[in-house]
Image (cartoon, rainbow, N blue to C red; front, side, top):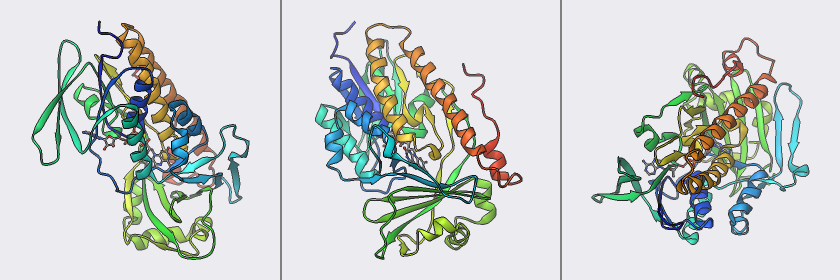
Length: 375
Ligand SMILES: Cc1cc2nc3c(=O)[nH]c(=O)nc-3n(C[C@H](O)[C@H](O)[C@H](O)COP(=O)(O)OP(=O)(O)OC[C@H]3O[C@@H](n4cnc5c(N)ncnc54)[C@H](O)[C@@H]3O)c2cc1C
């Protein structure tokens, strides 16, 4: 067995899960950590609200002070019209961890990469993982940077943190246990008036789905409509005019836009389906974050969950490398238990809305889901 600190860990994907895992491994003294990532900086990234609990995770990683210097927008809670036309509040006044945040997500992703580098990770940027070959211990990975020849890299242990693509896990034969399909169609607006953009997250349910609005740094407001692909098609919601027409029927979200102008001239669609992998561990590898399981954005838990799993995976990898046979099974049990808990909470939340019992959207979202056949 190798000495502690001499193992080579390769993490594929530099999102919150991959970077949190890298930082935690380096904090724990595992010194050879390489991340391969194919994202291109500077692009708009969806997924911006993080709850107060995330402050604690950033503190545990030892990067909270640097995070504060990034000046993301504070988020003081949420305001919702859900289950009733009356406004409900959930504010962070009582949270022991302070307030949450509305992130500039591209900046946040770059921040995590920079912090991983500072801790000693090697990062191969703009490089795509292509495949892997199993060796006696670990894997030989193949990757390619844009405009360059293919290269290989050896790893004693591989972490798949490629988000919902889950490319390494898929190559090992893992498949997604698909949950309810959900998508969103959205647009950014820029404040052109004197009225301050709200520092709360806004939710408003309507017959065909629900609206979400969140302030993002730079006096922008992101407005998205969450529904099923069938509703998007039936109402033609990829068309800006139809989308605006539907938005005008949601009085509380519409009101937020009184002094705002759209930034883009077309709406963008994103897949927001939930799923859990049938298996997220194997011989010398495991999967974390959205690769292992994705959650409905209504929970605002995706980034927190990815960060938490990244940190937990680092502990599990350390046990595994010290010879613990049970470590990966333990991790798998934990991720599946978290997913089951998530399904229960999501179901409870959607069932609070009883105003449109005949709506296909609400019927779909309120159907019971269980994680069967994969225990
Ligand atoms: C519409 C929508 C709204 C959301 N809103 C929120 C929100 O408000 N709050 C919240 O907490 N969460 C939200 N989420 C979820 C959140 O964005 C994810 O849960 C989170 O990004 C998961 O982090 P991750 O590190 O697992 O994956 P990702 O952030 O997806 O990172 C994966 C990384 O892997 C890289 N990669 C992929 N394939 C390869 C390859 N072959 N080779 C090399 N690199 C590769 C990618 O470029 C990327 O950098 C939202 C999601 C959606 C779809």
